Image (cartoon, rainbow, N blue to C red; front, side):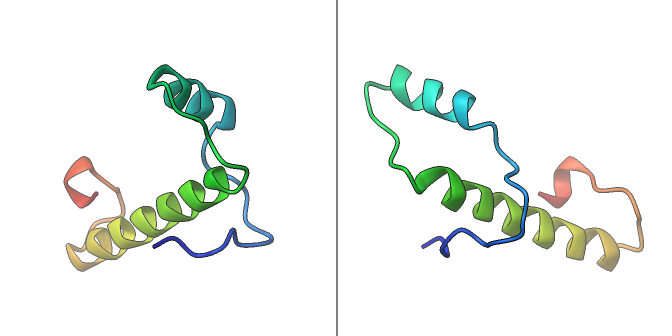
Length: 65
């Protein structure tokens, strides 16, 4: 489950694009869904950075995700 939207962090997703995608699925987006999605993206990137460092690289690659 996603944490509450973290204050002070920039949103990493384009809300209009996410809402359009969800709308195309014949669904609606709640007010706090974009913040939760952005927090998930932060978690994914943080994990990928850890794997990148563990592999002694400084470039994040698709396989790190």
